[in-house]
Image (cartoon, rainbow, N blue to C red; front, side):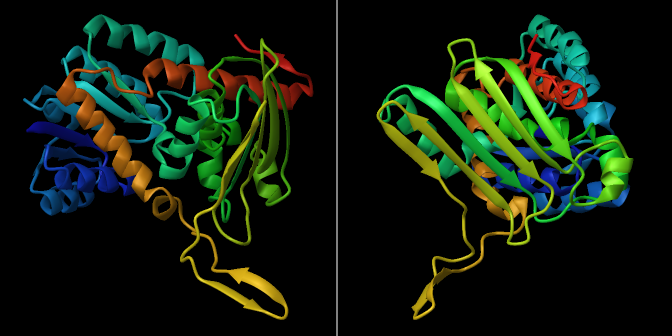
Amino acid sequence: MIRFGILGAGRIGKVHARTIADSGKAQVAYVADAMADAAASLAASVGAQVASVEQVIASDVDAILIATPTDTHADLIEQAARAGKAILCEKPVSLSVERIEQCLPVVEKAGVPLMIGFNRRFDPNFAALQKRLRAGEIGEVELVTIISRDPAPPPVSYIERSGGLFRDMMIHDFDMARFLVGEEFVTVHALGGALVDPAIGVAGDVDTASVQMQTASGKIAVITNSRRATYGYDQRLEVHGSKGMLRAGNVHMTTLERADGNGVTQDVIQNFFIDRYVAAYAAEVQSFIDAMASGKTPTPSGRDGLEAQKLAEAATASRKSGQAVRVG
């Protein structure tokens, strides 16, 4: 039985703890959080003990799951690595490429597994598309289109410490573009504006953005993000290839349809990221557990986290300059 220590008892920490507890292959041994009540509540729900971060890392657990605020991730990864623990960390490793480049060698020197929580790779719809893509169903990839729109923007207080839309929100899409295309992007051109909430612009960020990226071989990815979608949590992607096209659409609340003289309507799409990606979060943690049990290297890796962050920084620079940016 693989023993986990969970750092962070917020929304994502709770989701991951339940998956671990229900896996039959692992258990939560310790929970740490700056909020004592949150730690106690989560620990009680999964039969774990409450401890400090330092105590959890120094304990006899096999793995550390990091679900704390972003600005703590790199430090905690390094501490867990030096303690010889396998690590599953929520994205991103850091908001800074430079900090990630300092962190990863520590993990490599320790020789421990590190997996970054790009959960969308594990969504059943997106994973099925990627599998069929790699099987050659539509030939060579030529153009990837990714649409990601949140139902409503977060508070401006969150925006101010998020690192910006490209680092905070679009980071998932940068990883997904790499996952689908299978090549590194070398050019990034970004546009953005504060069209949803002017206060987001005052805070120095954008809430509506589009990014075009190209690989050295000429393959293109187009990503669009918005902090507002009046109809729900909009998550779609499409891959066009030399022999056809693959598309994954939104997940609706039910499969119910209504047809009458006015046309055909469907039930609304899901409205919350945890609901939309509940299966992805479970598959992500299960993949990490399976990798530990088999001795295989888990993915997405720390290097995947670094490459996605490079694209986020390039997009941020491109939006500010109005010019295309070479990556790396």
